[in-house]
Image (cartoon, rainbow, N blue to C red; front, top):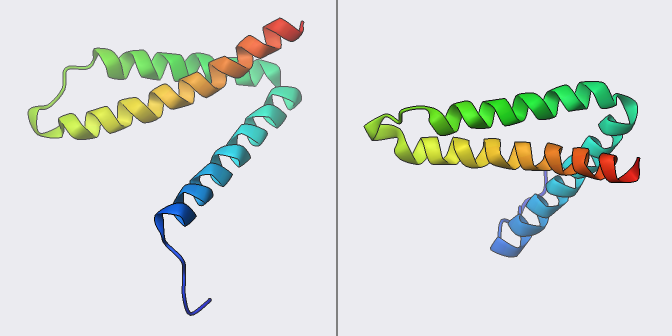
Amino acid sequence: MPDEIRTGKHDLVVRVATLELLVSDLIELLWRIDPRAMDQLAHDADHDLQIQHNRTPLPAGEHQRLRLYSVLQDRSRRLLHRRGRQGEAA
């Protein structure tokens, strides 16, 4: 392990961007391998998002609910975006 691990803001932004690209590439590959399973995953992501959106929030956990909603929304957006591009290619 290196003596100094760089954790500056720029380094963290680069690491997050790299992870986002890897996730996008993984989603792309999964769509090619098993489109039906990815359709189901996209449907499940949308369903999870709707459940979270309609849930009555607990008073102490509103910030956690917003964080979870943001993660679920991003998951749904990524999967549905790819599903939309599949339809355009067909």
